[in-house]
Length: 123
Image (cartoon, rainbow, N blue to C red; front, side, top):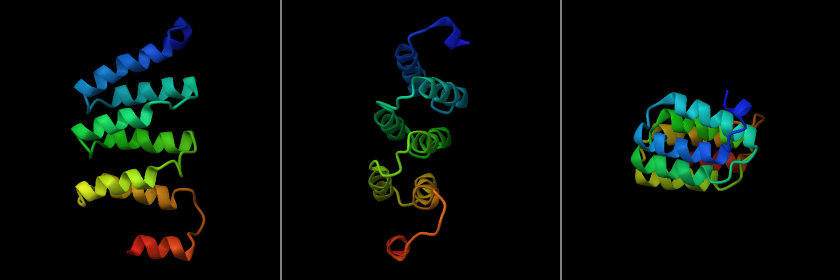
C-alpha cells in the first residue's frame, strides 16, 4: 500500500488531480483520494478541486459522494457548503445531486430542524 512506501501524499493528490480530470467517472480514483486525504488529516484544496470537477460535470455521483464524506469527516457543515450548493442550483435547478447534497447538509446531522430552517427550505 502507498502508506507503507512513505510516499509524499501531497504529490499523490496532485497525481490524482490529473487522473480525475481526465477520467472523471472512475470511482477508484475517488476511493483512493479519500484514503489519502483521511491519512493526511487535512482537506486543504479539496473544495477548490471539487469545484473544478463540477465545472466538467456538476452531476458526477462519485464527486458528490466524496464531497459528503469530506463534510462529515472534517466537520465542514457550516463552511460555505449551503451557499455553494445554492450557486449550483441557480445554474441548474434540475441538478438532483445538488438537491441531494442540500438535503444532506440541512438534515444530515440528525435531530429535528428548527422552524426557521423548515420555512427556509420550503421557500
